[in-house]
Image (tube, rainbow, N blue to C red; front, side, top):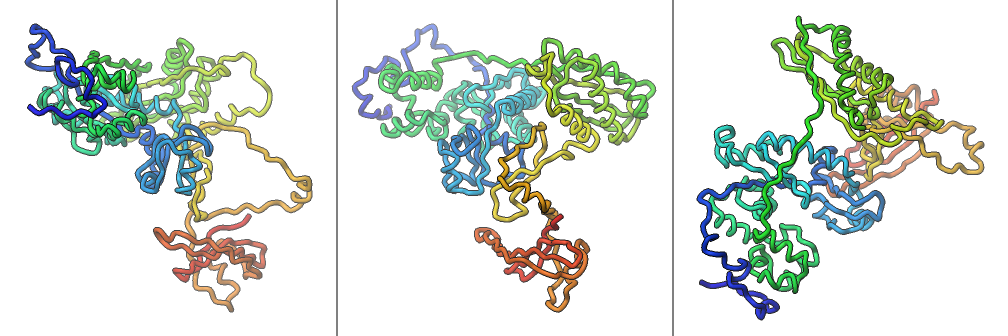
Length: 543
């Protein structure tokens, strides 16, 4: 038997009787292994905060994106997308340095409450595959599951693991799945095989062999420890475990010793399944089935009040109501009502919730009469200002938020948005519409000393078209060529420009000459001449 060679720094270390990395030889009474070792599965979502951000902002997929520790140029890059990494963005880099490499980099932090909500959603999904699920604290986005006893319900282990991964993909996450026998080995294999098919190991020996081949670079070790191990010529988990356990603490530190013990299986802990508090739920039977909105709202009034009281028990506040209407011989209709701010069990808050529910019912299309209604209320810890008895004077932002909540309830979640600036060279890509989650006071910048003179002429507002509108070929002799668009009136009397915008050589060449064209009726159009395509386009109107 040939033992792996050890780095010189460890060659003179005392070796325990069990051999490198194996610990002391167990007593004879402990040598017997169970005939059927307990199974353990691990699901790992790589770069979990980045996946959460891209799931909330799907328009950013494929673009250079980074998750930072905080807003601003001094925020540290915690995770970077593949498009950003290919252009030099790395973890630990400051946001300002990353943007110097990739000017169009989208960088933002992911708040803890959003990560917690995503982890809770994942936990609920995984509980449908196994009744015993334990979230991993480090790294975030990893879960251990007990797959035992589910063969008759969900098939053999490969079928179960494949279904688990499909569930996560259906939620919009990429994940690695490994089914083995120990915590750290399944985690290491799930991390290393995040883009491969689910791995089901047949025996502890196969698990040890496969886990030993996992490169240390795939385990996200502390940088100092990884650099030290690389200097010692150790590049795999098996090489790390071959080091004498008694000397790892002395020569590499307590953190490395704790990792060595976990990876070697010497720190055994039973699965600690998480328990979710089921949100309050109320059901209402409607006999005979009915589809009249006024009667449905009247029937739901008392259950809504009862649900609000249940959610607010213990200092919580209601943040969302999910309403499922079971229809007569048709698929159920599911909708949600989200108030502008968490609600308390107060009469005014109840009236506000009923008003939002009425607006949502008025715009809900029902394919058949409703035979049963199910209400589920989600709560959150109430903020201190919500529990205060006295409120300060000033702008009533809460009233504005309630008004926007009514608009969302009547027309959908995407009806209330605002423009957010983006780093892009084309005007149409320099902003994006994002949902409005809260109402804030406008920021008033310092005014110049002569602002009264500047206000004598009202400022112009540039109204962009959803897409640049192609214009007919320009005839220098035809002064009415712009009026053919139907958006401006009369002949063009003067044009200011050109203002050159160019770029896009790395994807699609862009070279535009922008002009402001004023007509005889005072209309001002913002248009450009596309040089590579030899075409005029109308891009906006000035009001």
